[in-house]
Amino acid sequence: MQLFVPLLFASMALAAPTRSCDLSYAVVDVPANSALTPPTHPVSFLALGVGTQNYTCTSAGSFTTAGAVAELFDVSCLYGTKFLSELPSAALRLWEKVPVYTDAVTAIESLPLPGPAASSILGQHYFVINPVTGSGISPKWDFTSGAFAGNPDAFMVGARAAGIPAPTGPSDIDWLLLTNIEGLLADEVYRTDTRSGQPPASCAPGSEPITVKYTALYWLTGGSIKK
Image 1 (cartoon, rainbow, N blue to C red):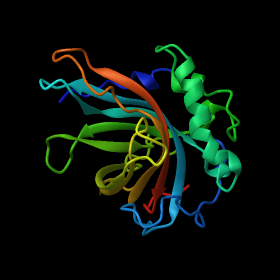
Image 2 (cartoon, one colour):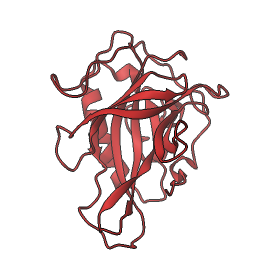
Image 3 (cartoon, rainbow, N blue to C red):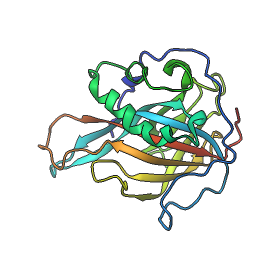
Image 4 (tube, helix red, strand yellow):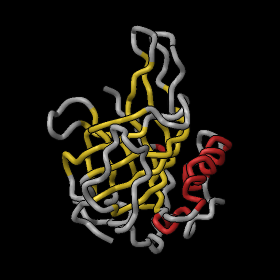
């Protein structure tokens, strides 16, 4: 399985994170009576993900996932505001306008985040070899070079526990619930409010891998590493 090199992070600024806000009272916004059951732990982090979903073409002429890469921006202080629900769409509009060589930090600099985009970085989201089975790939949320720089345990590798089609339509990737298989950063991650990220319906066998820009909200619950 090919792992995409996270070029998205190449120009990440090493600025100190901005102030975060308390989320212990926050409620993860998922559809009622769906496969996405309520969290079993309080919300610890709320991040805007800006990145790409990555795909390879199978011999059958369809795309299969090859993971994702994204920058994760702290939007905890926007919880409870109207702008939070509008944020993924606003970020996607900016992200899709910029050339492919432009990083996510630069792309969303004009968004009204609690501070400059570079100093709002919590960490990165990407895929790694599954640490339990040693095969296949698993999603990782990595704060070891962001909000908790130098703490080797500030990450979570997850496994999909449930998912539903995005309520916003078929062009948006699924909403997910993932549970911890390694790391101390969180016990669960919810991916909601997704925008774009789906591949074309078909491809020519042997064609090059593709990346599709997307945005989403990530709710990290529990964990033993706190702000």
